[in-house]
Image 1 (cartoon, rainbow, N blue to C red):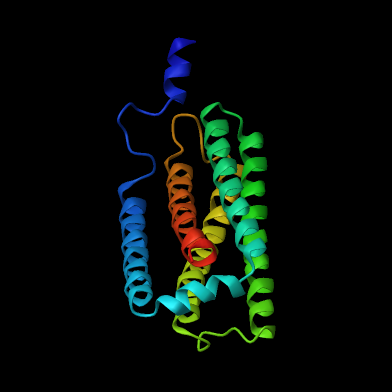
Image 2: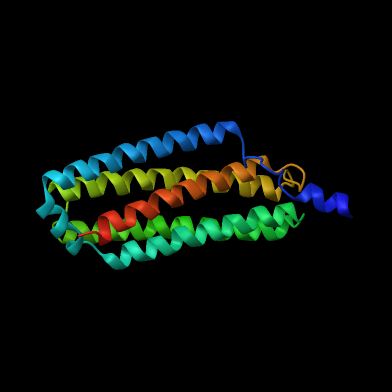
Amino acid sequence: MATSVALQMPVAGGIPGNRGIWAGILSEMTEFALLFAVYFIARAHFPEAFREGPLRLSTFAGTFNTLLMISGSYCVANAVLAVRADRAKTAERWLYAVLLCACGYMLTKYFEFQWNVEQGITGRTSIFFTVYYYLTFTHMVHVLWGIMGILWVTARTKMGVYSPQDHEGLEAFASYWHATDLAWLVIFPLVYLLR
């Protein structure tokens, strides 16, 4: 029994996932770091646009998407825990919940962008909105890649590929999703709250 429990636990000091996903996450974080640098440089040069810009955005949409991203991270963490406990069906259900959160995020962004355009807010409205669209659209692309990853790991979970002893692919996806969530947790206050 002790051996079976030991097999379900991650290796102490081990990095979840694999080196490939961490190279991808480093690239993602570098990309967002550059975009955040652009944000702060533009903010320093156009403070008035960055004070007024967030007032025109839908704080509700930004907050709702924050809840969806955090919920997705919670669900994917539970999917990993379920696989470690040899409960593949439970893991599958958690992954469907992640998919629901990710699709909800994309749908909310679609309606938010549509509302923005109806309010006359485009990337050309001001420098703030140019930066806003670059940041949020880039994040959307990463969420879209996450959706493809969810579909992949869900199919592999359904096929019984992952086990308590071997679930590196699922951990790799979870690490990617958490990194994408982290990027949003920086974007949200910068563009929706900071004035």
